[in-house]
Length: 414
Image (cartoon, rainbow, N blue to C red; front, side, top):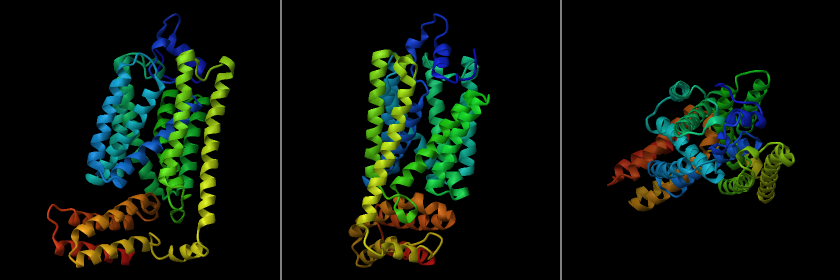
């Protein structure tokens, strides 16, 4: 069997089915088209945003959120394995949940265990190589056009989960090491994915190019999401996480619904091929989705700009040069309020107020961290100390005061 992926949907058909094999009826994954890549990138952003919303805004925390997502992923995988053929809504629900869990695995290594991004990137790279090695020696092929047995599908999803974790680690490493902004990050990761396609056209191994592009969709989706959601003072467009999530989710639902209709009417092999201009229609739908997102984001950004008070831009430009992280006055206001409540002995009120600090800091991470990872790390540790002291089972006023005064000192030194 060939170990490389075909270059076109028609080649995918031939590779998967073979002469009279009939295997194509039992394909469990989609054919690789423009719609596939569009949904994949958007689902990456939605998955990450939704997980952050549950952990930070809802207040479930990373541990409970991870547990919930792992449980939901297990349910989705059961549905995916039980279905007899490619079912778009089940497949893409599973992809979104894998995206969330893969991201949280990397975040656990980095934030909880303190593992360096260099180390975690190397670990997940070796794990992915290990999955591919076991997959090939068991099946003698890595072609995703032949995901038609339980074992092959198990290898496929193991590779996807590892690829998401690797994409998260490698993307965060690139962002920190190179200090990429959201726009440049989106351009660079998008260009790298395009380079994978060009390499295939030039004769590069298709399997390697596909999985390289698949890994890169994670940092690309994160960069696009941050570009849209982050405040303009951090280099984003200021659309906001809620609007971005709803917009992306709406586009995903439309594209997946179209996929579902096509599969039910024509079967998995029809999508993206030559029936009634199918491949061109697929490209048009994907392109229209991207244009709709850009138009909506631009409209929201323009509306926010029009509503901004006069002189706000001048204030922002004057304060961003204060230190490596720029203007931290919004955080300082919250910390001062928390400190006043602690000094007054009202620890419950201080614990409630510090939630605002946690939410604001987590929301600003993507904009602040690339400016100075070391300064961001010092601030992050000080905030963690504040949160830990106030959220202890029996918080001590003196310990809380020590933690909050330390945080005030860190802010003043930035």
